[in-house]
Image (cartoon, rainbow, N blue to C red; front, side, top):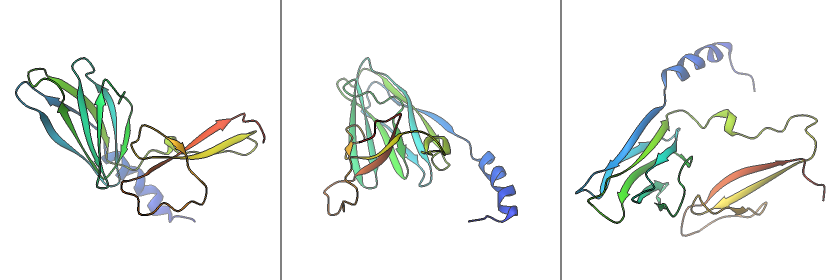
Length: 167
């Protein structure tokens, strides 16, 4: 599909005006939850760092499904959350110990460098779709399977292996 030339000229200016925001969620002594961070519908967020010393949890809601990712039990660094979503930090053990998580919110669609492209003459490449219900544990999705009436949300990603062995 060809885009009109004027669209191709305007799009870079629109993209330049939308910048990433880096925010730090903090739980201070005497509080148990931070403020809520909103991820826009066409955007995504990436956890840049978290305080693993005293423990905390990210409370994430994506599409009506809630997730409680506790650290240090789970490494949340570089976790990507597609919008629309909300993220909140919760203290786990002690309301007198501060904790934090730094999150980058991108108001633009997921970046093209995070997509999968298999170029011509790429050799043996194995592409697998994977499914998760918690964004941590991933299993191979079954091609053509219908995922309906599940009690929670399901998330999908694509994994590529180069120099794969032929079956």
